[in-house]
Image (cartoon, rainbow, N blue to C red; front, side, top):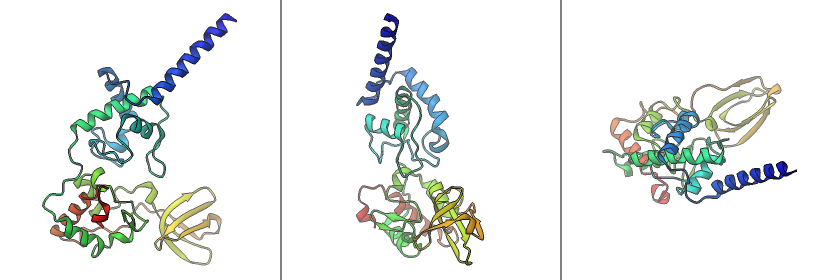
Length: 265
């Protein structure tokens, strides 16, 4: 009986400690050895999307103090442990101590960070005009409250992507396609052809957002053809824009940091 009581007491103490680390406002694991362990865990769980230096990859740039979903220790702990709904950022299955140590390492990336996107010699005002007119970017991309839904929201793109990444995406948009914007083409039972991005798919059905931003659902068994090509709906702009226009457009994209999107539209 006494052993059972002692065992229950230990479990309660462990649970209390776990709850405390979850609810802490400040990171309780910031020693050198904590950062070293956080680096090891980051390499296992985070590097594929964010890069080892936090400067590149599919995920948000971490070598920066900008945090769209909150920059305090408690807010970042929640982001790492729970993920961000509606994005590619999943929650980690690690325990609270491991998450805090990963955060301790991420803080070191912030210190080495510079401005995510450098405008260079481009003119953002001319770039905004290209974005809306010649480039027709608003047909697929949202900035603030305006624009389309087929492509990623660009309201914060200048805070989370580098100039080189943006240029590469403009020249070769199919090189790095976010899973939430994967292309789908299909032919239904009546011969109707549809193209857009996949919203959801299982073994029996596929749901898509077509080029007219209409949500369409299909039973796979009724389709004549279903293709998921490894290419983007976005055209490459290398042949459409000259070097000056490309620089202006990138300068505009670099200016989109979410602070004043009304002025950016």
